[in-house]
Length: 102
Image (cartoon, rainbow, N blue to C red; front, side, top):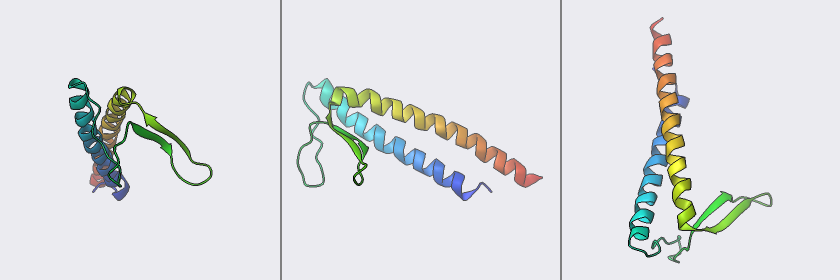
């Protein structure tokens, strides 16, 4: 069997890709129609961009209202990085399965 840690990392990477691709589709569709995406926060307020950063405590760092035109390539790069991670984790899983056969 593959390790629990490897399985969790693979699952998290797939979840990130799924979430990012959904957001990317919404952004792309809106921008192609020359209108801002209708993306709302938990309180129903429309957001004019994304937030980037580490949002916790006094040492948190956040950027607010990152424009959608900048968010798009960031999301695309994030998806590409997660797909590369899945590829590496798949190889790790193969090694773990091979070690079990010994």
